[in-house]
Image (tube, rainbow, N blue to C red):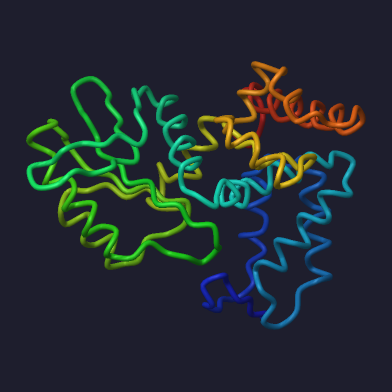
Length: 278
């Protein structure tokens, strides 16, 4: 059995099921799924890093008859590319929560009983007001440790009575350490990581909301994506609804046409209720 090395440095046996699940979740067509698996089997070797397996899958999808499938598969990396600051991630999480029926505010300065705090996201549904710490990481394998749970709880305690907060959440695009989770749950807090809890995790919420960040676009450079983020454009959906946004980048005509085609693909996929990703 071939051993693979995860981003955290941990080792585990290569799992064809995990590879299949990852491409199925991305909504890759069935016939291409089989081709991807066959391709990966020719590339694996003892102690191969999972990031190399990921790279081989992406490269294969890029040369497939539907190269924009690569965009859908690279969703986790696209969220990491929302950096270097955590602000776009806060905006992104707020947009996801809106699809869950929450009213949201980002980056609010609140005066507590002891000190003032900048709260990443305040979410409210009906009479429940939630204080949310959005913990962004731009490197695979990075985890939020117990200190995040400790200071989130401290902020909650300093603000809850004055602002009627019902609960504190930590939302992160990676993982939380075991102690971080234990402390949070022991104190009535909620953790949402990339794949924690088993259902209702960040990946589930993103797939349910069908919201692609603009960093998922393969046809734009990193600097062009950053320019859009600086101007408050976080979602591909924003550009689909207001195509004039793309004009601000002053792209050459051929590149603009390619970007528009990719956006149309993603927006149409997002609106298709029969898509197997959802």
